[in-house]
Image (cartoon, rainbow, N blue to C red; front, side, top):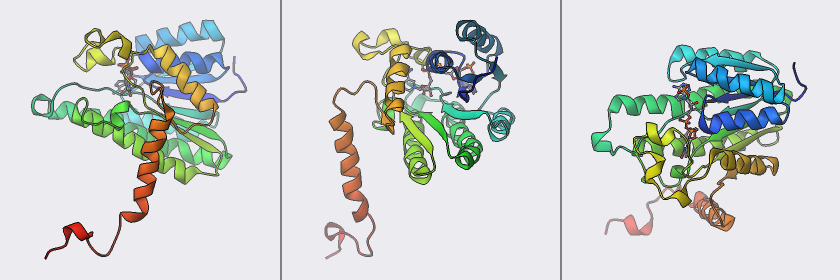
Length: 264
Ligand code: NAP
């Protein structure tokens, strides 16, 4: 069966947050393209959702850290006119300090957390823009605000996702293409096992379920929110941070150094 709602492509849909996005969009009547490396797990998620929601689901087993895997998904995004939503979710993190982390693993992290969402967005946006409708959802992290909290390359990669989303939103303003960036706090998924710090080590009242995280993010999406931080109680704190950034912006370029840096 194919629906009229538009197809949602979700990366990292074989587990955790991506699998919940897949379930929720299927529940809203969207067909899906689900991407991850593990073909068996991806098919199992797809089969459950086909039975539960009766939508059409294509699975694509691809490694988004490889050029070939990325190219396969880029080709789908740039040629399948039914795709209306891109959820850039696939990624992994690390708790290892700089001094003990493998630099090759850090490079793989940049490939999946930075290069993949950037290239997939470039592949998807021209068609969405031409149609004057569509949605790009980028999964960042609260470490985008505090890149020193976990591994620094992970923090830097998620700061990129936030910064890229800001620029994307500005560029796409008025085109009908919406951009949302989601900043999850600690979420109870396999992420933490892969990062080398199982979530059982964290205080229980820090860790949100992937279901609550995605449902909250979708409330933000439905409200047309740009940045959604599901665990932040007081939205005024985010607004104050944004206001401070915007206050500084006009003062950041000058032909002369600021007074405090002038030589005597
Ligand atoms: P997860 O359960 O480990 O899910 C990660 C997903 O990404 C899996 O489906 C995995 O599938 C896929 N993936 C990983 N590497 C891939 C690659 N090279 N190519 C294609 N797919 C790949 O973790 P999660 O918590 O749901 O993470 C989803 C996103 O949320 C990530 O971007 C993460 O940084 C972000 N996030 C998580 C938390 C948290 O506390 N959990 C907090 C903030 C942000 P395969 O292994 O089958 O490829």
